[in-house]
Image 1 (cartoon, one colour):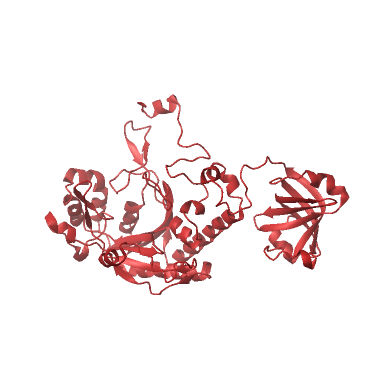
Image 2 (spheres, rainbow, N blue to C red):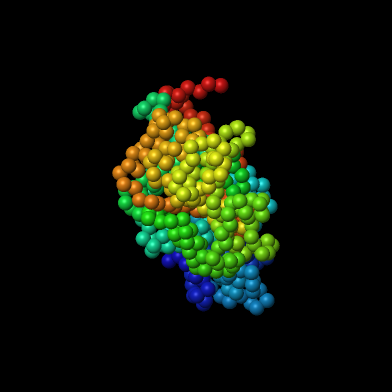
Length: 459
């Protein structure tokens, strides 16, 4: 029966069977050493048996092998303090090559930061073998597990919402999916589950969450990807502080349980108005760490009272500052004009070490006020009803006051793992211009597929 490398420590003096990849091979003449790697760690294997020497001599990096051997203490002068299993070694008594491997195009034993990012992306399945990336994905999984348990312990219901939805004006460009059965019509991939989460409040669920996949066709940078993960939540019968207190409690408990070596600068988290943040820090996501050279300091801060509308000098028009479904302060809106710039929303962002990691608002649950929010930007009634009529109709059937938020999970993991960008925390990633170098996506499709979708490509 297979033993994981991490479990060899409690099997000293016993025979074990190990399976994994050859990380490093060292030939010392009559004795051959390899470092064997599996999902739990690395162990040194010693081939001193001359009957195994011929096969062991053929081993190369990344060959997949099965090894039987005795767990023995290393000589004192051979102990490796940098290795979890550094006090023991495996004295091999059997060796079977399960699969040979070509020489990898990238070194998978280093931390990978010294390797060009494009070649790492192209051979991502190899890149993920490196211990740093394995740790990143395992910590991502542990963090997700904590969040899932925490929300359910607080009576949240996990509900999946559709991936194929309706295209609506929500800021970024939609990824469109053509319909085969309805020629000329399109689904849109969700930029966020915003409308569905609010409709679940209409449905009476009261507390919802999900680990949501979101899609935005916009220019990418270090902390963005065309597709990303957010922890989405919504709560009924709440005020702004109720949502913020719940999220704050989740973050504090997450750090205590899963990232205990991290230190939070201040609890409760400071509250800063958008106006003060911009005047004092020139940013709506200020970095409040006392020591910015300390990678284990976490400085959370709430930014509140965002502008409801913002004027774009580039486009010479007003638009929503954040979420069109946010409730304005005092639950009222003016009739238009220059007063738009003075309206604030019941919106809140959670900043961490200079990044926005969560955002949300108390929602506008009043049908006529929601319509007015769009009318003030020049939307005609027929356009409003065509895009959001289902929401306005739903709200007419008895909707509770509600609010929610979304945690940018990839960005949160980037900060917790002290990584330079979110690509280091995601298994399979895309380049800054949205390409998947491993599978060569996006790619051409054949004429038959286009014909079925009633699409013609013009060049």
